[in-house]
Length: 114
Image (cartoon, rainbow, N blue to C red):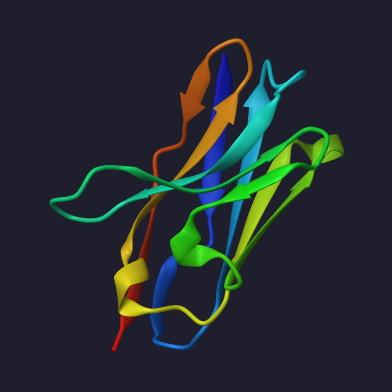
C-alpha cells in the first residue's frame, strides 16, 4: 500500500502562485509515475500534470507554461508549482501515484479569487 499526503493548497488572488507537495509513504518503492489531477464542482476529475521516475512530464494544455511539476525520487515527493493562477484553476487537487496499481491522496483545495 502507498499513502499520499498532500499539502500547500489555499486561497490566492488571480495572478498569484501556490506550490503543492505530495509525499508518498508505505510501500512507495518503484513508483513509476506521480502527478496531479483536479476536480472542480460539477465537473469530472481531469489531468493536470504527471511526471515519471525518469523525469518525463505531461501537462494539460490549460496549464502549460503556468504550472511546473517536479519530483524528488529519493524522498518520493512530487511538487506542483502553480503560477499565474486563474479563477478557472479553482478545484480540489489530488495527488496520484502509479506503482502496480494507482493510488490517490485525500485532496487539497485550491481557490483562486478574481
